[in-house]
Length: 106
Image (cartoon, rainbow, N blue to C red):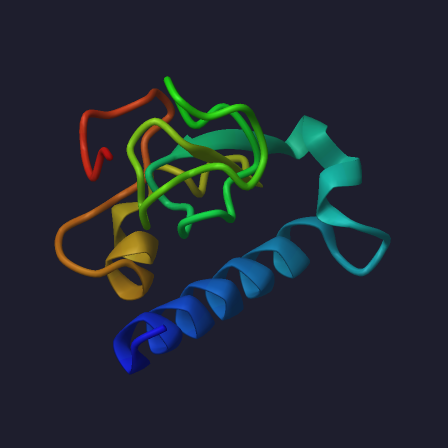
């Protein structure tokens, strides 16, 4: 893994963890609180999506490239389309989407 990819992974992971802790508190795992979560497409690192990474994949952990547009990850409700947040953690002009997007496809 390249240094850039490692740094991006650490930044994205840290930002996601901080937002999840803030959204669900310390009461338990974020995924136990799915009422307050939404599917966010285009923000997962390769192999780190929660599910449904489009044709040719099966489920969790099957996305092939970073930020694959048809792979999603659960994030706190309201965070997915927050371009200010994603602008700080994703490279380029990428943001999340509540629907699959045609970007960074295999």
